[in-house]
Image 1 (spheres, rainbow, N blue to C red):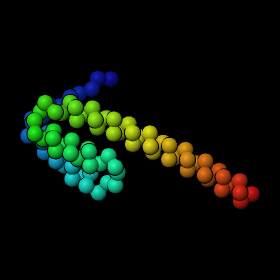
Image 2 (image 1 turned 90 degrees about the vertical axis):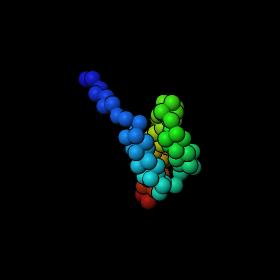
Image 3 (image 1 turned 30 degrees about the horizontal axis):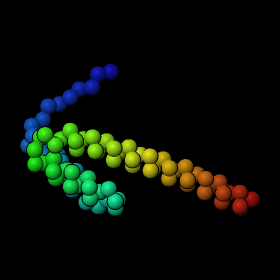
Image 4 (image 1 turned 180 degrees about the vertical axis):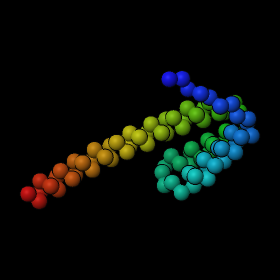
Length: 86
């Protein structure tokens, strides 16, 4: 399976980054502000894009880890409630 990469212009990329910034406006997360600022910096020049992508990858991994931890905690608490009700 090979990944297909579409080449886009810097203007298109800047437009997409602006869309992402708007979509993050309603997120209540302590890392949101740093991510939004990073996206704004990336619009300043193409040389910042790789750093931004790396940072976004870390943020996504953190969010995935956080969701998985919350799911485990939720399962544990549900088991405690079930045992208490029995």
